Image (cartoon, rainbow over all chains, first blue to last red):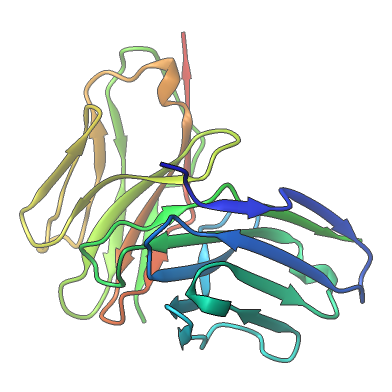
Length: 115
Length: 111
């Protein structure tokens, strides 16, 4: 079974430029998460989807970040415009459901460097 | 608010040594607790979990016991291998099903 797929794996952009990350979760997983991991830190949740609905986006900086999950499968996370402080690894994860009994499976992440 | 505190790394051990990575948490109620591992170049993987007090999670020779009285979930392994070199993250799941991670502990095992 294929795991969570993310692309690109690496991205280097200049500040004020837009950038987008793509995630394909494990087939059949209803819940999708986007996390940000700063250097030397643990991941922090940005947004969680239950199917197409964003059910927890309280940590998403909405002035510059946006996300969508069309048809409840793939998801895209966008930053526009990017700032130097956005340099981090962006992780996507998925699970069958949102409860504590369901394992979250993580993708390899997209490493973003903003110059 | 809810938080997780892990011992700072890196932790450097020789092969076959005993491993302990300390983890304590602050949370309301009784959260589920997790250890995730990140091998070089790979995504986070669930290593083990415990959902209630006194539960012991175990996998691949690693163990951790949910201690409510000390709010701890220390990770242990009796004999580490070079292949265990990775970054280990302790995490809790809060009442809104959000995972809250510690800052990670890098383990380096030398032959």
